[in-house]
Length: 498
Image (cartoon, rainbow, N blue to C red; front, side):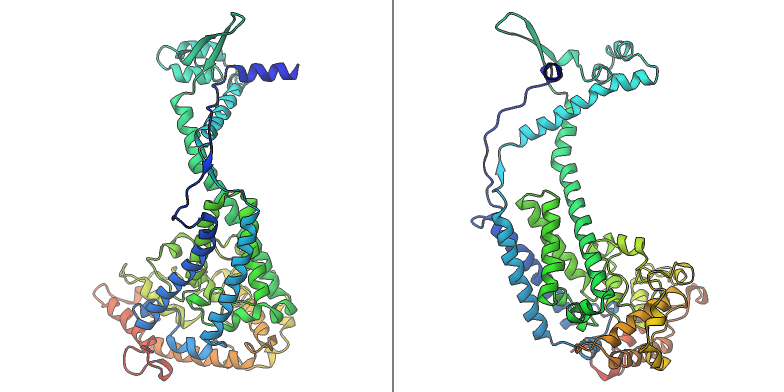
């Protein structure tokens, strides 16, 4: 009986078209798509990295740099050669895993698209079956309403009747001489089905993949910082780069690189149900985003930095000794940081960020005090729930012995203060070669120098203290120039053109 009801449900639906599938031609002949999926993320990594490296060496946008060239050399605890070596190791592992993943995937086929679109159109038609009942619940007579609408709006009348379009129905004879109605799809059903198949479903798949990879990386990344053994054994290697640069984005311990990046992206790809070509773009886009997050520039016209607040300025906080236990979210959005209270709350506490903020306001010719490089509001420090940092002061036994002058910059009181205490204690606890008291002492000295230059340039003057005729543009140029060694002697005696 259920079977006969099902047959009646589908009897008046439009027939599905026949199809014949063939192998999808490669995007770039003669390279198979599965091989190109392995090549493109690596090409994207080094291509974008070398672009930023070229900008570094030519010193094209010093006003947008988060750190001076001198800091890159003095504060980082790893050579560039070691960074390149470990990135290549991770990319070899990534390629092997990608090749094995490709072996589990069927080859992409073409030729079934019209059939799949028709399936979606059928689903739309079947969904319309519920409309008369829904109208009845509201006290409306669907049949009478459809009859009134039919002369002027026949398509709308068909929708009201539950997907029965009298103008599109045709009669066909059967061998038994009985009439059978077979309907065609309406134009609006075809358009909606087309949009669902080609745009909405892929958008949902990419959304799922982004959510999975952001969730995967947030919780594993956070665990790497909250667990002392995990941090000192694996993750501290990545934090030898206190001043990130583009091609250091994938500088990790090989195990961590596999667990966080390679495996996380693979799980996201599988759970989202992507095909090979979708995976190709997802892996490549993720690579672009990761490199951009470590580029070291707060570029106001960079689309990747404008689309989401999880950008170079946001992630740079996580690489500083005072923010290393905050801003765990990567690579796309900051959702989990904000929900679970691990976003940095101290604002642009460093003088290095102040000069970048000033430069970012250059086009507007006005200083917006609410604009921050770190995408945080220092006022939140006093009001936000201190969790999960409420015990940081109690646990910071080593930091309490250090003088305040070696704990600079000082964040606002409240949650940001606890975040900075926990972060600095983590640096002190790291005896793997990239931590220790000397890191805090050096950063405090350079922060003092940066603040001195900023103060001399008048960088702390607010917009309200300037008249409309005051040359605020010149002020900004003096601030950014001083902090990058463009006027007189370079900061810390290092030439900015190196």
